[in-house]
Image (cartoon, rainbow, N blue to C red):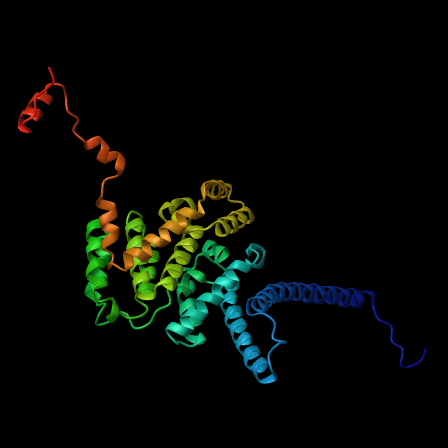
Amino acid sequence: MPANIQLISTSHLKTVNASTREEAYVAHDYQTNLASLESRENTLRNAVKKWFGPLEMLDPKGRAHESARHEAMLNTLCRLHRLSCNLVAEAQRLPLNEQDIFSAVLILNRISITFKYPAGAIVAFCESRAVREDNLRLNQLDPLQLRHLLTFHQDIPHEELTELDIKTLKRACENSSKQDIHRWFEAVSKRKNALPRCAPQFLRQMITELWTTGHRDYLETLATELTVLDCAMFDVLGWENSRLFLSVFKRLHGSTCRPASAYIDAEEINAAIEMYKQLGDSDQVVHFRALSTTFDISALRRLEHTMNAASKELGSRVSVIRSRPSPVEQKKSVQYLTSADIPAVFARKGLSLAS
């Protein structure tokens, strides 16, 4: 037998084959996980391209600038997405929603324009909030951290929104005192031009914190007053930010969060239905399907108009509308004359009854 040929024992072959198979399985699992993450990030990339449009029509310099901007946006979205992926096992992740991707792009652009904070600070804020809440369901239903993007803020308390101001509002919400909440916003709205620009975002975070601690009855009043303040500070953008936050809040908390139902649109309702189908939560599917059958786009438009109109009057219109009795109540309050009252009325007016 040639010296360079060696016999390999059967036991050694079994060991080698087992080891090879194990390595193959590990490699396959790794590739599967990598492909899954790559697939989701490709979804992000395609949505960003769709949002910004083609670059072919730009000159080389403009194309390079826009390409860099698109990549920066994509990188931020991927970092936000990985926050939820780190907290949700692969088998439990829901498909990415294109509408959520577009919403995230919008919010990031608004933060960049309004507050001029770098992407790293925004991602760090979202990460600290997501890790602190450590809630599987929230990260499944909101994989791009919209709930935290819409509460991003810095430098509060502030000299125009002090610790005392914050505690006063929080106490009013915990006590579900609608009058105290309204009075607080009326006082604050008078100095709206001096408030920190991220005050609405901070107050939206308060909504989340109060809800997490078990308070519920404050939401309808606080949502209304905060939306008016947001409109007063940022006009149309204020409405959109508050509406989107309450829509996401509605998706996350479903049937337990009825006051936010007025702020969610048809496309968002359908997205919630699909997500809860994926989760196998039939009760929430039924709830959102019921919302879809009663959704009225004109009611949402009227709400937007009311909030914007109220913001021009520093929030006073909301309280006036609420305190005014309905036409039905006014009609019920009318005192109709009886036959016994008629002679006295005619006598007071100097009239005589026909004989």
